[in-house]
Length: 122
Image (cartoon, rainbow, N blue to C red; front, side, top):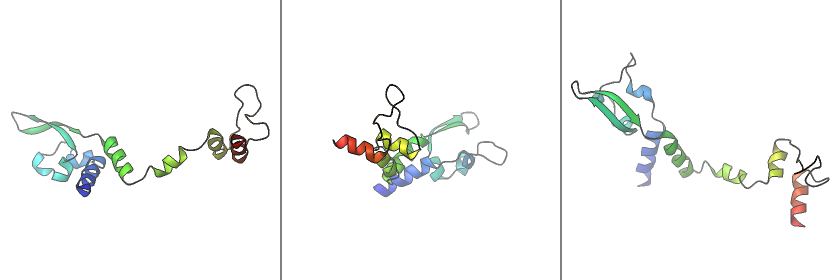
């Protein structure tokens, strides 16, 4: 179900290590950590003698955030930018279009986006 998958991605992507620590910076007992936070954990190591958590590892936050971003369409603006020509990119940052060799622009007198597109069409 899409809602459940989204909730899991949110739990992993927005996990915060402070939710697992007490005021002294020690790992809290597992019974004090809620299920939502535990969903972000991929591995727990316990001290067999004491039964306390000695180490834990989170699921990959970046993977969860990337998947969530794709699901929410947050990369659509990036995808539109990926279709730009080098001339358009340079025009956005105010750069000159350099020649491949020498100091002349790629298109003499056509250093702008419109000029590049006109040249590409002919």
